[in-house]
Image (tube, rainbow, N blue to C red; front, side, top):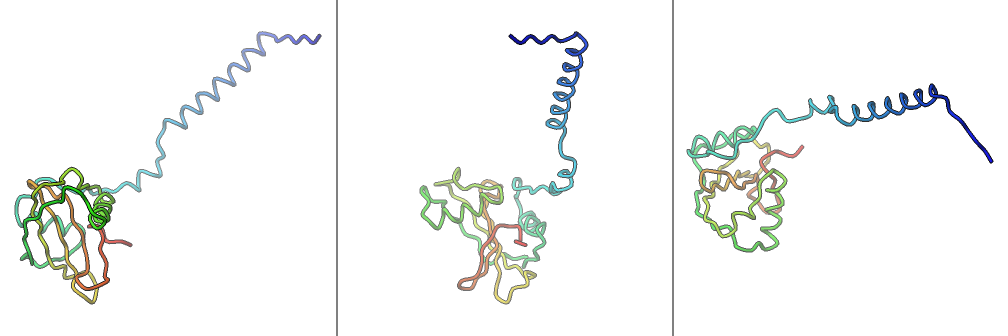
Length: 157
């Protein structure tokens, strides 16, 4: 038979070591990563309270777009009750920018289309915003020609 005895000082020593490790792990888990603080976007995008033409223009200009001040088109649209594959892909663009059309299915909204004048693309570039009860619920930046591009409000890098 093997018998091992510990002195009270040995027990205290291991208890202090175990407690120190527990405190260190807790501190590491609780204290935020200070390097990540600088990576947080300093600008918040305001989607609510878009009541006037000037506010719609300012919304697009906050992303660095220069637009013709007169909309090319203002149209009443109905968000479909059920999304087909095209609307599902469009809603994926919206979800990527913090919006979601699912809760507006079947609702009437207004679509505003503007020409972007400073995109740096050879063809025509359009900015579209969809507004429901003074809130922007969707939008995109796209080329008007053929197989061009479409993305959310933020210009891809």
